Image (tube, rainbow over all chains, first blue to last red; front, side):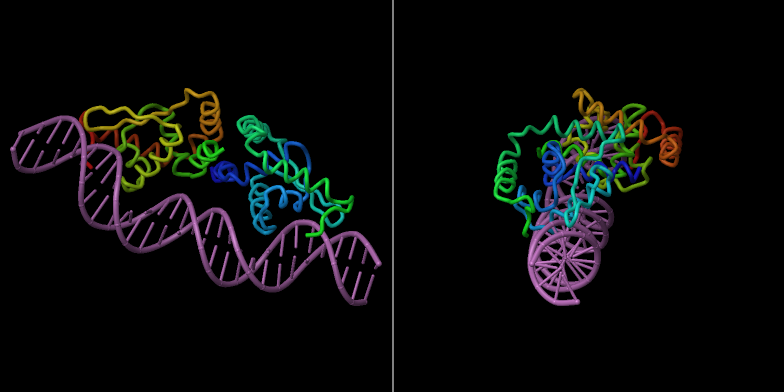
Length: 114
Length: 114
DNA sequence: CATATATATAAAAATTTTTTTATATTTCTT
DNA sequence: AAGAAATATAAAAAAATTTTTATATATATG
C-alpha cells in the first residue's frame, strides 16, 4: 500500500507534473529541466529524485550529463503517465516549453554551463 | 493542473486509501469508518474531507448520519479508484474489515453512540 | 424543549515535505 | 593532474500537512 501511496504522492505536485510533461517529448538532462522550469538545480534534483523513487522516470548517464526520461514499462504507471499527459495540455506549460526551446537554441552541442 | 495534483494528493495517503477500500463494499457512515480504522473522529473527518474535495467520494445525509460512498462518475476517477481497489488486496485491510464487522454486529439498527 | 448523538470545524501542536544554501562527487577538458 | 561543469546530497530553514484537542452545528429523541 505504501508503494501505491508513493506513486500517487509523486504525482501530487505541480512541479513534478510539469517535469513529466516536459519529458513527454523525450529525454532531458537536469540542466535543461532546470532552465525550462526556471528553478534552482537542487530543487529540481529533489523532485526528480521523488519521481525516480516512485519508478516514474529513469536515468541514463551520458558523460557528465544525466538524462531523465519517462519510465512506463509497468502498465499501471504507463496509464498514470498517459493520463497526466492527456489531462495537462501543452498550453499549461507554454512558459516552460518556451524556456526550454530558447535554452536549447542558445547552447552549443556541449550545451550546459550551469 | 492543480485539480489533477489534488486528486493524486488525495490518493497519496494510506489512511485515505484504506477508506476507499472500505467503501468498496458500499456506503458507510463516519462512525463506522472511525471504528474500522480505530482513529479519532476528527481525524477521519479530515481525511474524508480531502477525499470529498478531490471528488473521489460523495455524501448523503440520513438523519443524523452522513453516509459516504465512492464517487466515480468521472471516467478518470473511476479508473483511479478501480486501480486502488485492485492494487490493494482485502488482506491489506484485514484488521479494519474485522473491526468494521464487529462494530456492525454489536450495534442495534440505530447503531452509533460515539 | 432539553438533552444526546453524529459529524464538522477551528485552533494549536506535531510532523512531514519542500526549499534554500552549502558542499561533495563524478566526469570532462585542457 | 588541475580546474571546470553537471549533478547529487546534506543540513538548515521555511512551508505545508496532519494530528490532536476543544467546541460548534444539526438532527433526533424523550
